[in-house]
Image (cartoon, rainbow, N blue to C red; front, side, top):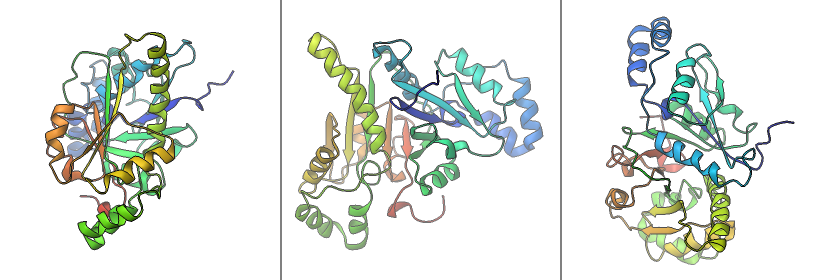
Amino acid sequence: MAYDLEQMLVVGVASSALFDLAEADKVFQESGESKYREYQEEHTATPLDPGVAFPFIKRLLSLNGLSAEADSPLVEVIVLSKNDPETGLRVMRSISHHNLPITRAIFMQGRSPYQYMDALNMSLFLSQNEKDVRVAIERGFAAGQVLGSPAADQSGTDLRIAFDFDGVLADDSSEMVMQAKGLAAFHDNESTRINEPLPEGKLSEFLRGINRIQDLEEALVEHDKTYNRRVHVSIVTARNAPSHERVVRTLQSWGVRVNDAFFLGGIEKARVLRVLRPHIFFDDQRKHLEISADEVPSVHVPFGVVNNGAPK
């Protein structure tokens, strides 16, 4: 019987997002592919340290414990790597060393496998390679570049996910008004279109998948009022009144939900993120991420008008 991915939340992760490959990458950049292959072969038995996305992936996979059937997981994570199968051995051994239940991988020497996202029902691809992420976004996939240093993962089993709204969950049509005409025109546009849902953005399907898991948790609460919900979703946006209501109405129209919303109106997002401590935060503007990226695992989604132009 074929392994069915259709009802799962499927995430693709590059080895560069899952593990800290700085040392190996330095060998590649300074000495070329041949020396890199030699280095990886010599260090096959040396486990890689966790990378930026590691805490998020670890906790996401732990949600499979909520499934009523052991052979019907809720989450599948697949490694998508530009390594060849031989140099990829160190990645797979590191996965085993860290007790991550990841068994599936695609290794394509020198090429990014993101084009297989649709075939594998993936709603998200994470990588440290900006070019790969940008090309994936341009081709219609949901992708993000991890930034900063690996954050320490605290104890516990909860999973906190935070999203910006425009350019991440929604498209950038409102942001285009902001960039072209300024803040006053933006607020006027949102006020007059309160009941007009925004088109969906790149990560809306990923949120739907998270909501399906939250639905299972709500059913557990119905049976046991003492059950502590493990998954918590927040929006952290530069919007504020009067542009806030369109966000709420849009999410309602899509049939999705979040637990919290922070409408900050220009207040530095890092101030809230340091308190919220999400295991991952998605934003389409690097300036909102770089301030706190070494404390909060961050993902840049290079979509829309604020990301036009060549990679930095």
